[in-house]
Image (cartoon, rainbow, N blue to C red; front, side, top):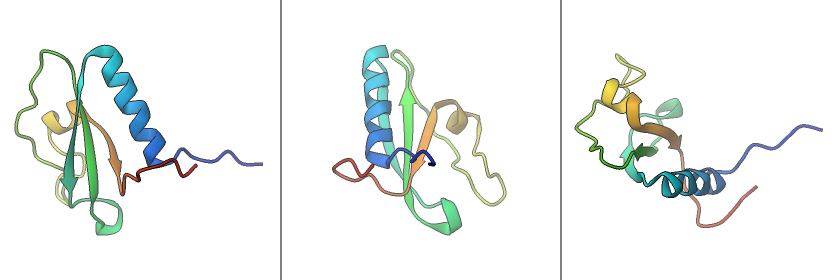
Length: 86
């Protein structure tokens, strides 16, 4: 039997809980660079006392984004539902 992957709702809840424990902020931003050109949401975690500056998101030319993006980026979620879908 194969193990199911965690749904986006549960992934987001884990990110939020971990951020709360460490005093970090979670920032979500619309993303137009996703799988197969689909839109989604980038999730960033910014530690307490730090400020996320402007960043360059991934593109065809730079698929990993810039250093600022890589430092804070935690997930790309196609959709964040309002309940668990596991």
